Length: 290
Image (cartoon, rainbow, N blue to C red; front, top):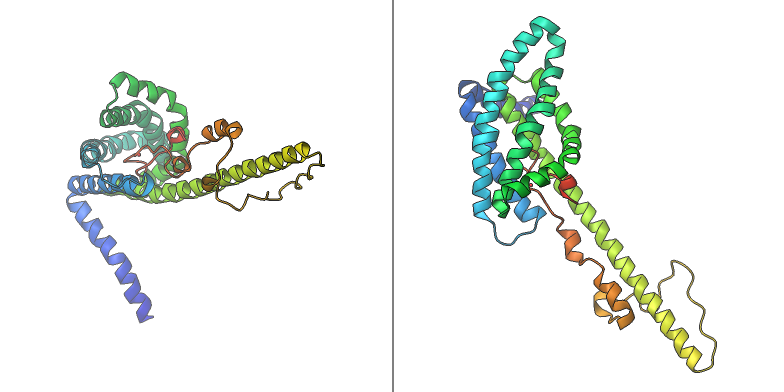
């Protein structure tokens, strides 16, 4: 019993202390959480997801500034300033039960499509050296895919946020959910890359085995002998055990080899570092969710 009491105290005392600090300095706490989370999410995206050897500190600074200005100051004003006033009027007209669904609708169907997506694409384009016109074109092309990916996670998350969280904890709650989402997406991407790499190796082995059978048949035809029967389906060819990188393909298969994406591309899919949705959002989702 004493062990459980100590464990519970160790778990909940830091949260209680954070709640006290957030209640006393709500704006500073919210902005601080978004800046730290955004900077950490971009570093995570660069090193773990994209596999960069050198950190792009300019990019990290730009995203951190976005975390300060938009995700921190603006969202605190929206979630802790504007939305409570909307909630008061909505409760008087529609009833208390309609408040959380209404705020979730305004956030996910008005705020994000109209303000967040364009702002983020313009920022991403600035970091990548794109023109504003090109950035907005990409935003329009990816709009519905991004919106559906957004709703899967953030409709239930924001409903919980607006239903149960006090106003001074709403911005930190968003930062916490997005940090967890970043880890989930990174694990998902790693598993996807592994599967794609295995499929690539299997395809190359099949090409090598097919070439070996064709070469044996040609030699047998020249010698006037019967060509050996091809191996049954799913049976490795005589050269299938050799790694595809160590087998020199003939000119007839060289063109097909060139059409196969490099294995490294499967390990490093295009990543859109998204500071609010967990540091990474495939586009669409991440052209494949920062």
